[in-house]
Length: 477
Image: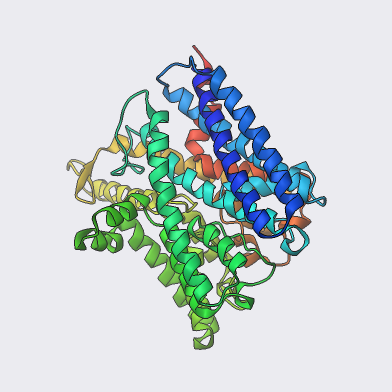
């Protein structure tokens, strides 16, 4: 195993997060929080120094990596980087222990949006750091899906394939920088547009910045306690909802539209099968919410339906889609959004492929001797290609069930454990408050928070990739 090459890219990741700390420090100076900004500068310098040492000591690393190297890198990145990013939470919020700080950091980087911090009781710079982590996490999720997960699933159905993906065997890590720059520029552009319109429609500047960063990453963290309606106007709420839907959209299709800007790419944004699936989920949530609340809450139901369909989960008003049955909300949260997006969940395209495969198998039962290949999006897919999706579905269900049992063992009631496990695995933290508002993450004990950390990481690493990396067979010669 090329450990030196893995450490080399972990060193690059450390330097990247040091740069984000410097950006947050500069913002802290603008906010007038000099002491907090000084802490971020000091941490950035230490982290960049550590990253540079790792990079320079790994210069003789092999130029190529194996599949096992990629799997190990994914696991190490998602566990170590949140640990580094948790240091500011531990230093600046005295109410947090290390488990709480790590929980907050994992929730932000995985774009889950589960929080135990009270925003009004901590420096604004720390709240901004949380939003910056969410934006960076969204970029990283999409980049890893385009480059690493697409390569790991070469024999499958191509769930993660896109115009970005070009296979250069053994040089996957080298592709991270190029694709990452494109995705970061794309999400930064959408966040900037969202920020402009939020401010234009009356949202305070600091809150608009945090919400725009969280919105495009479908994160769900808010800069204030309570509902958005108290400081976000109706027009600004629609802007934020549209931004969340862009975050849940296929990033390669968004890039293709911006790059080419013609009618066919614009049409593809609406006709893409995953995007249509998102619109269907939005429509079902809207109609169900409209049935329960009526026309008086038309705007709230529409906006919150978009938040839920994108797995952002922002709470806009006291009365909204949280009036819908918890089972419906949990189901759609587990479905998720597009495979190449910041959204969580199983992903729409996987469910559509499974349904198509199931339909074909049922037809075969009535015509056993007939050759019936699976057709999807005008492409013939071999049966063996579905094995990874069925295994993913099984693994996802298994992690959901184990998380449920583990949370129950830590003291949560069964209904709360179901919702909390779904919230963490689908990376949609606000789902817990939408389904059972009587319980909060801050009230949970460190053991419960530790279980949720593991489930959140499984949801982001992708269940099969995590299982493969932890499998003993991966470590045998």
